[in-house]
Length: 139
Length: 121
Image (cartoon, rainbow over all chains, first blue to last red; front, side, top):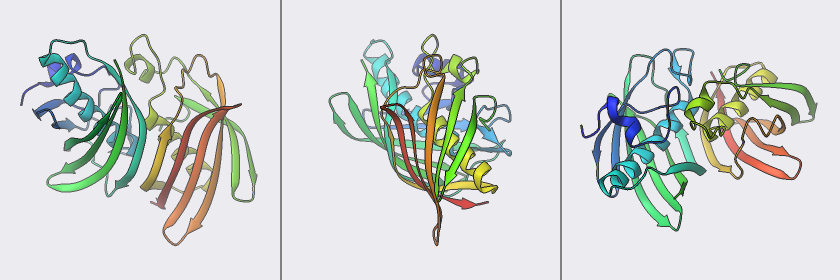
């Protein structure tokens, strides 16, 4: 673990109740890995499961944590990022309250202010969701 | 559920497989405090969830998003500035599931385009 839950908001712009990652586990210039425990009081939980919106936001914030960690290492302020597009989103299952998901994001391309990432979410080794995202980072 | 705490929809009009409804936001919802502090913007993933929730009410089925080929977020929605916007949907039952194409608009401003397949749950 390289950034704990207590310090996660130092590297992402989102704040409670819209923080959808707990810890940054690993990170380099290309990849970031996070974990997230699904709590019952999460604003994106419905019917005891993290919704499709929640799992997709978790991928976006895993990307944000990767950008934020590198930015912090370079001693620059954390930028706000917005999802510009999502492609080929597939949802196989949703995590239940009490489960911890593990998310991996890899940057596949960077064009000016747009970053293209590929992300996937697993729970107990089983693939739950995957997609590609185009993220606009406002410098 | 984001309905009815984050958004409400009224004046649901159907014509064939096309549907239109007026969306209103609750700018005081806690989500806007975290996304982002002092700079409230409707999270893109909430637009996706809104399409699901309107489709659930219209079809009277519990559904889950299986696949979305492409979602485009084209303009920001500041809940205080966009008090009332339109959602337009096309809902078709196919062999793969419930195919939904949707967009969020206000006059000439296009905020969101959605194309996805839901399954009954």
